[in-house]
Length: 198
Image (cartoon, rainbow, N blue to C red; front, side):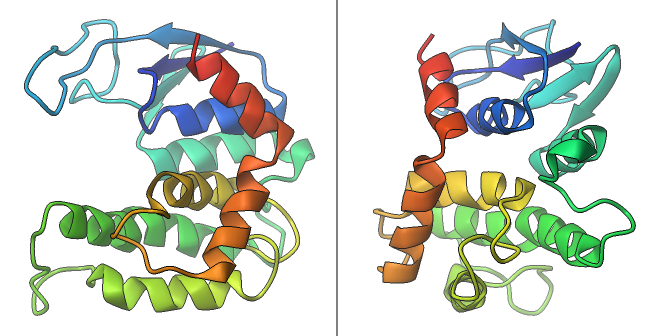
């Protein structure tokens, strides 16, 4: 049984979505975390090393960080074809874009959100203004991140765009708007949102 350590309306909500897409048996354990305003605290029941969400436990095997959880779950449930298996020609692409999400996209987005200039010489990522043309070109190639097949990448990127697409952090784009509409129209997304509300 998979346990999702979850706080509603956080990045762990995307894993309700992924678990629903996968048709996995899972349980949700609500945990407390520190809030942006300084309230709250680390829940001792949460296995994440910094008391953050998301984290999962699969019969005692703990996995944390969004890209790692996505890879773990899509590998665990290969019949759902939401992540290319090791023999699939798209596997390298899948791994690269998972790493790009964690190592380039999310740091660029957070830097913009926090109004922190990206140090061009030493940072392993670039400013969001350099990231978004790459992202938009990617999305213009098909309905989903890997073309016409929905994947775990769409859970990560799609839920982030759904959250921030109307903010000043993202450029206005018909391609991005259409992509977000496809993501949020998925039945598993609706089920996840209903579960997130309790």
